[in-house]
Length: 85
Image (cartoon, rainbow, N blue to C red; front, side):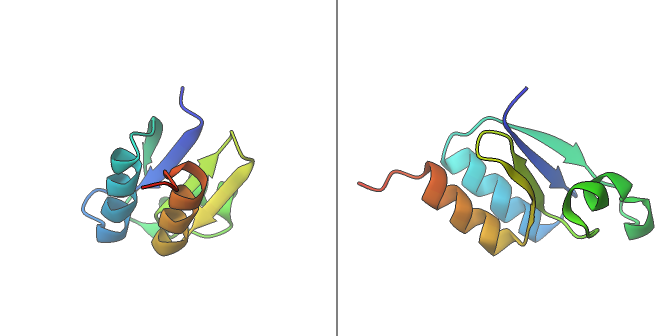
């Protein structure tokens, strides 16, 4: 089981942006596919306080329920990116 978990909705362009960054950084992560209906997204709401996706958790750094694709990408770059590149 990976430290990073991505709450994801297939076809979501914002989720795709986060998946691309995770893959670019060659990070292991687990994916939890959320239902299309916001009213059924209880698991992601429990970790983030909202029903939108993408959301990540990162057990390695204590991140619990980070929403917003641009914030997630920035976090991943700052935390796991190669600063010398």
